Amino acid sequence: MSYAFQKPSLWARTLPFFRGFDTPLLVVVVMLGLIGLLTMYSSGHDHGTRFEDHGRNMLLAATIMFLVAQVPPQRLMTLAPALYGAGLALLVAVALFGITKKGATRWLNIGLTIQPSEILKIAMPLMLAWWFQKREGQLRPLDFLVGSILLAMPVALIIRQPDLGTALLVLAAGLSVIFFAGLSWRLVLPPIVLAIAGVLLLMVFEQDLCAQGVRWSVLRDYQQQRICTLLDPTQDPLGKGFHIIQGMIAIGSGGFWGKGFMQGTQTHLEFIPERTTDFIFAAYAEEFGLAGNLLLLGGFLFLVLRALTIALEASTVFSRLLAGALAMIFFSYAFVNMGMVSGIVPVVGVPLPFISYGGSAMVTLGLALGMLMSIARSRRLVQS
Image 1: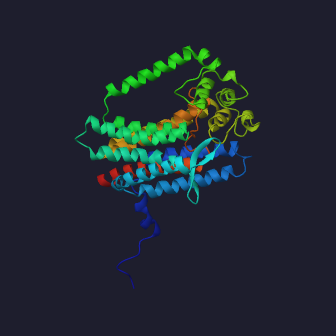
Image 2: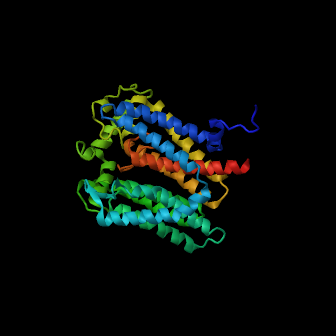
Image 3: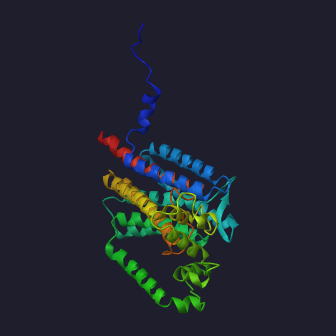
């Protein structure tokens, strides 16, 4: 006896969930993830279960990416106002009832301890992309002003915690949406020129301002110290400048080919502080050298360019703006982390994507990748 209808195989039933995934993006993410696991095994082998936890965090991020990729961009757009509102409300709750650790109030206990500012890394570009999608075809200067206010509120609350690193990431994501939405270069260039002029003046008068302890009223003490340490870490080589000095020694000592896997002396003799989190790039550079750095830089560059390509191919304003902002998030993460370890930007708490230890950041990356996959997948399914 034969049956007219046969039950589809398991593979045939699951294949539609994978159809339309962006293969180049997936390949580079897997490559970066493998580099992260290799580096964590070396730098975190004596940090308890850091390697195992890092692997579990990656699996969690991969699961989130897969699930979010199944959500159409139109559905993501409808969730934007609610997610932004919830994130903003939680930031206000942190300011009123937050948990303080090491002088910073960034966490909230709601049965479990969460860091609401992480939500805004994704909610901010979602909200601004939603706003400019609604204003499509009728953009006025007032619309950019409203977008700037939407961005300024969470950034101000995050800076108040204080958490300069997260504030910079949220600000970069939001500003990229506003710029991609059509903000005029005439409004973009003046702040950039002023910022460059300010940096040059600071470098000229650094000795007087920092060495003599001149107080800068616009910055908190710790922010001023970080800038002074960046300009001259040798002023306090065993204190505030220790991180930067040891990071640069580790990077330089790696040479072209590196000292070899598990052979980093700066790493394993514990000269590099936070070698599994913020300063893991120094541990990686010491063991894999310039050749490894070029591979890592190439991976991040390809990731950013692929995300921008997905943005260019997107079919709606919302999808284009969101994908462009997510590309800038990956760029900001990588640039700021590598820059602070190399001594070209102040030290802030920004992890290196897929490499640094940290569950919250990994979840954020999983969400961002899932949204990129969703946008790319939606485009491919429509074309087919």
